[in-house]
Image 1 (cartoon, rainbow, N blue to C red):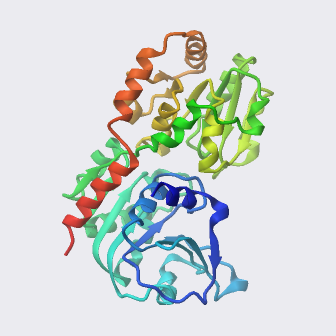
Image 2: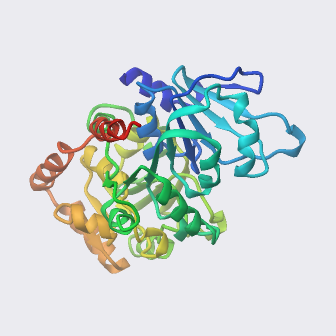
Image 3: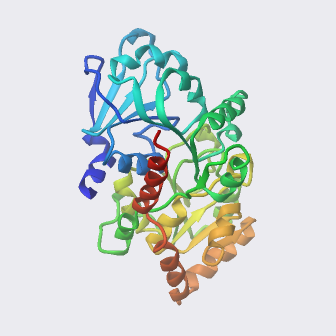
Length: 378
């Protein structure tokens, strides 16, 4: 199982097939706003494990190219998991091409990550409909106004709703009687590699220590002003940002000699960067887009044994305030960086990390989800 998951996480292991691929029988169809080959996060962790026992078709939002009207990409992750990139003008048009890929009309599970796919509900015969709500997408930058109504329709038709954090759970439980809170978990063994003798990645090995690092999507959820002000106040500290830009431009990024942007890295590469961090940071802005987030990277940082500094995200305060340094201002940020760099006794931090990590894993999370899904089999 572990080898299969590692293969699924390597982008260069994926094969691309086109429309001539014969229609196949699928047990589950997943509809997702995130690209499988983008940042490896909740959908990839959960669906790759679901695909150990079910044949899964993972459908992304359309990538329309008018010059290739009859061509879609079907990415073969492995025998049990395929990813479809539809070449259609809109989500509704996916209905017209689905018979090219899906042989069976009755599907055991329909799994939704985005309400934007809700217009397709009537086009499939699902035994069980699952909405895994990992973010409040309607509050994100550039979100369409009709997404709120689409989500209400999806929740009204869903048999099961999972949420990626406690704040989301409290928000969604009023709309459906079968809402379950499953905060994002961690592959502890993967990130604990940063604790052993693995090599540092080449592009971080020459950056001056101490290093305060972040990895993840860099978008409107990051407090760039906080990062900039803190970096200016601590010129001898290197601030490393790892990840792709989304919905912001490179010109929006603060520029200082001690701020380093290393771009997007694969899931398998992350421990080689995390190993170099002296402190891990989550400099999230407190805005609509972060109101309901429960950052997956909190547990990943813990698995690597890194001290963590975070802004006051509600779910971080609720679950991790005993071992995560919480800050509001650049002055707070500087103070915590200096404190943690000079702190020699980390035993209490490590003990708290151990208590938290032993209670969760992606394997156990997906096992519990599977039991709930099976209990709703019609």
